[in-house]
Amino acid sequence: MAAIHSVLKHTSCPKNLFFHFIASDSRLENKDEFSKIVHSSFPSLKFKVYVFEEKLVENLISPSIRQALENPLNYARSYLADLLEECVERVIYLDSDVIVVDDIQDLWKVSLTDSKVIGAPEYCHANFTRYFSYEFWSSNEFSETFKGRKKSPCYFNTGVMVMDLMKWREGEYTKKIEKWMEIQKERRVYKLGSLPPFLMVFGGDIEGIDHRWNQHGLGGDNVVDSCRNLHSGPVSLLHWSGKGKPWRRLDANRPCSVDFLWKPYDLYMPHLGYDHSSF
Image 1: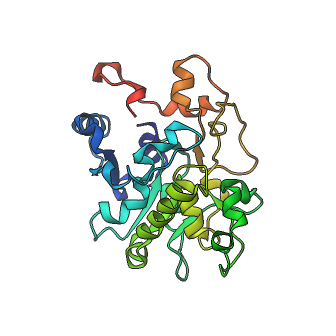
Image 2 (image 1 turned 45 degrees about the vertical axis):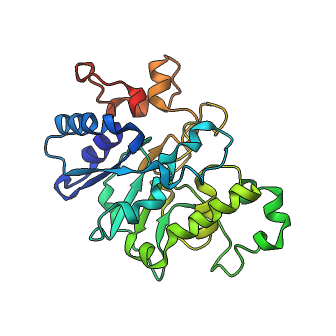
């Protein structure tokens, strides 16, 4: 709800926006409730709720370093091209733990050149090797995965992506990601949930976007709920990736300083009968 509020508040033309929400079929009883809450909070909002069938990935998910990363809904981003109607050719994918403080239409205008399927901020000085296991790097079969890419592979966070769904469908990228998930079940070549398959398929071959569009890591690392400060430079989007979430820390009266940037966008209304843990 806070993420929706932030997008609407800062865009120059709310009428241009259409939201596609992805809900898990394991919580179908919440679908109508969620639609009701969204409509009552944003009466003019154009949106649709899609149901993601967990059975698509439940046999492909491997244990991760944090149980929350094993949630099937984390893998829904890999199936957007199938979930959304074919007439939807391009989307901006956003995780729910973000706040947008700039005009989202500026992100929409990003051009995906050549054969680029997705665009996201890249971080080429990150320790890329730590996302994969010793077996991955010691095996010629896997270590040459990135060979032949247009540039060295760089880390990118999958919580904010501009996606060309036409190119995605043409390249059958869902199947390519599923292939790595199948390998992971047998060989354990990575440790972190849904991110590594994206890195293996797209690392070194995405459209680099300005870093201001994903100030990520504000939730601490994936094991420890730690406080972090904002990075230097301009900010268009704040992202509480990591274990700590602002609504939980605020509700527990143990907020980090960055959580107070999230709080003004919170539209929690007790009379509607929902709580933060539902989202």
